[in-house]
Image (cartoon, rainbow, N blue to C red):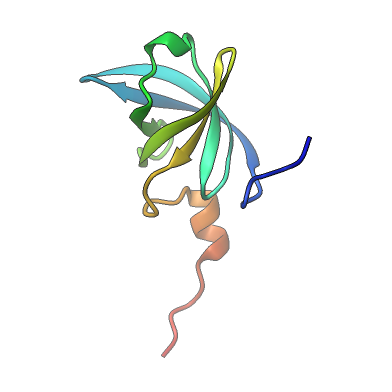
Length: 98
């Protein structure tokens, strides 16, 4: 199968929460890139096309849109550019120019 992602994904296996109509659904983010993620969910029937994803470890919230579904795993694209995860912020941060 041809790889179509623009950014390399990193395996993370991190707990997160999907915000749906004022409630949340616990999920497991299995891999992530600057552009999107693969997420394991209990039941895809309860996940809307657009939702907010909050990571348990650092409370970063990302606005997401589902782009594919495979059994109980969904692939999402991040709809915003702000709030990169710590691993990406750390690897891309450089000292400010003077």
